[in-house]
Image 1 (spheres, rainbow, N blue to C red):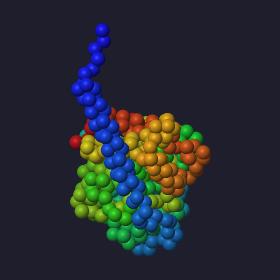
Image 2 (image 1 turned 90 degrees about the vertical axis):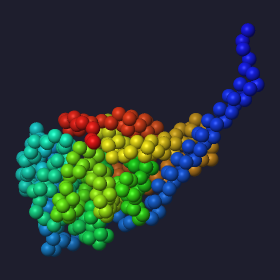
Image 3 (image 1 turned 60 degrees about the vertical axis):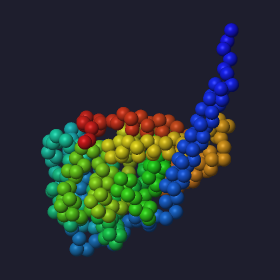
Image 4 (image 1 turned 180 degrees about the vertical axis):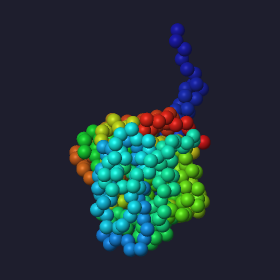
Length: 381
């Protein structure tokens, strides 16, 4: 004879279900409010950085390009810098490459700094940047990744904008070159997670230091000031070195800027979707620079406000909040169009990848990857 739940037991089950529904609704609403506040920052943004065709006069400038096994990719950035009207010294820091990176750099007219052996506690890129900083003797230093392609006039634009706006450290977001359909599907979805967590670049209202964002693909700063602040030693062990440096300096009172630079510099960050999934999926969660509670809140926003509403709509389990969030997601997609040089059908379908991307982001936060460019690093302290 089967047991029949008593009235009291049924009421407890019903009460528990009601509490769970209320908690779910509250979490969704809270995530929607947070996402809305971050997306709304797009309404008040600083003007984007655009190339400045007038060369700088009387300014001593060094461009530092850190490179490790970049012989196949470094050519375009060196060629583009050769067309920039502002006079500069070009330094390529060859970080113990096993290919012809140094040979390509010398052929392009760059001065090559032979990278020294990696010290204990350092990650490769900040160590290469530190060596570039030590070798520079200019007032201003611009750093560019080896996979960037700057427009002529970028150097003058960076320095003039940093001076005009009073930035101590300025970084800009580049325009991505994603040619393959699967990459166009996955990459914009991954980029959208940054907007949902931190808002768009160039927001007029500054973030608090713990939420400051940066893009290390393209930066400018005064050499003496950064050297006086300890250079890159403070972020020696961070794989997310660009954000770590920006937050470290912001806590010291530096004015740190992050602008839209999609009209001034391109980047071919990944050639295939699986590379973006593996490599960007490792760095996007930023577990080495973000507190666990903040990471949990950010993941909740990505899941509840970005990834799930579209699929709830497809599954016919949606409500008014889901519809509003789907419309907001489509608006975000439209806003990201300037961030891509090529926008095929896959780009416009990229919200379909939000769910697997949320999974990748969560895995990256829970199990941080510590391998990069053939090296495995201990967790940053």
